Image 1 (cartoon, rainbow, N blue to C red):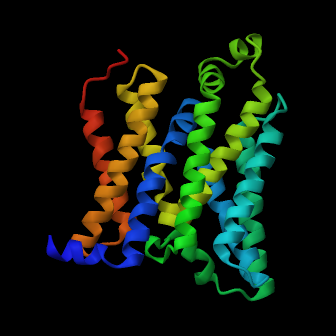
Image 2 (spheres, rainbow, N blue to C red):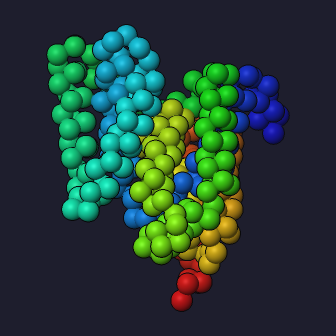
Length: 270
């Protein structure tokens, strides 16, 4: 316990802890949308799009994480625009953008002479490199996501339930879907900075899946997803400090354990 208290006396440890806890509590809300709309392929595409952004950022002398964030948001908006067309599925748009992003990233690596390992570091992530500015930005993103759910609660619920019904009730479905895509992009981009692309699912997807399995109401699903995200982040971080483990991996393990426990519970939807 003493070593844990000593660790939290270090500013960089406190920044990292608060950052990942805020992310786990807020970004996890997006998991409900991703699972309900079957958008799981999108977050995988956005991770690889971040690779292209990181390559561009490094090539022009900027921060790779900043380039990844901007490119992920741009890709989210592009996918939203593409999928508005009736004959283009989300999976088709995801495949197109992921392939183009990977190709673009490797071309930049070859032409600009950017070290490949420096770019692929984005898949590992390092929460302990979080600065005070990064923490404030993470809090801002979290508040943005919570505000979105609070303001558009009814519209989001209707879109997730039935798009045709939502349209008949006056909900601007196309506009809502565009915002949803962008918010998912914000969540993935924010998670990239915290735990890396390979562990995005630990604080976004798994909490949402677990919450939906045991929740019958939209509000309870959101609250449970936030709770599971918080527990994954907080317990994973503390476990990493105590046992000297990678924070991202510890967070993912805790999230997976929560998911496994929920799967063992009776299915409330039967």
